[in-house]
Structures are given as structure tokens and as C-alpha cells.
Image (tube, rainbow, N blue to C red; front, side, top):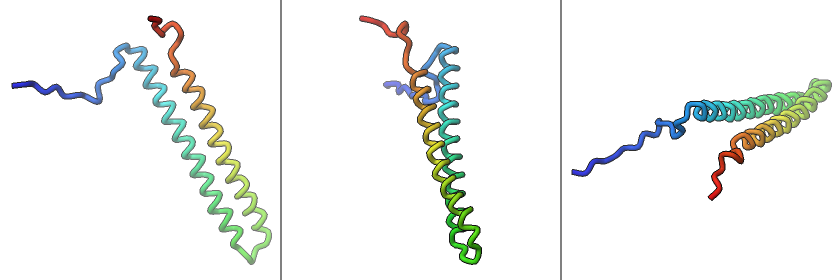
Length: 106
């Protein structure tokens, strides 16, 4: 009978404990970066909904200014959130590149 070897997806491929900790820390940072982007998007959507609701009020003309301000801040939140996400992703990509000492020359 032939034995079947099962693959354990939870077994870490990195055996060095220091490298494993660094790898896990970078993964946590990536997830936190994505969570922050989603928070910016959520806040922007709330401002979009609030701004459009204030623009629909016809009895209060002064609320139109606040509605347009909310829409402007909505766009600003999206731009800032995406900009911060891209900047941190670039910095993380630079951290993940191997050092010149680690590269073996044949």
C-alpha cells in the first residue's frame, strides 16, 4: 500500500523564528493598511449620503452649503485614503525585497 502524504497549510514555511516574526509583522501591517483604507471609504460614503440628503432639503437653503461641504470632504477623504494606502504599500514592498547579501550569485 502506498502512503499518502497530506499537506498542512498551517505549517509555516519559514523555519527561522526571527524571519517568521518579521513576516507575520509585515502581514499584520498589510491587513491594518487595508482596514484603514476601508475606514476612509466608509467615512466617505457616510459623508456622500449625508451631503446628498442635505441637498435634497428644499425648505432650508442654508443646508445646501453644508451639503456641498460634505460632498467636498467626501472626495477629499477618498483621495487621502487612497494616497496613504499606496504610499504605505510602496514602503512595505521595499521592505519585502531581499537584501543584496541574501541573493546568491551563481
